[in-house]
Length: 73
Image (tube, rainbow, N blue to C red; front, side, top):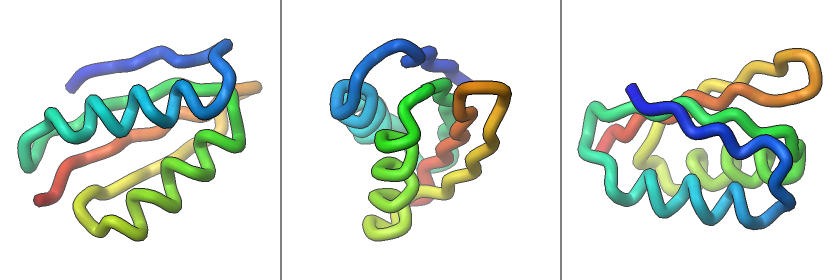
């Protein structure tokens, strides 16, 4: 599993970086993303729900979000 630390970056940069990485992933691959932008975290979760090609789990840790994405298709 890969990890991507995007804390300290302004939206939409983290969102774009994660979507690019997600496109490169194969079904079954996972990535953990750390980000402190609630706006980007929300956009990412909503995008995964709409695209229906990935599973997303999100947790709030102190002042940042831990997002685990798994490619389904």
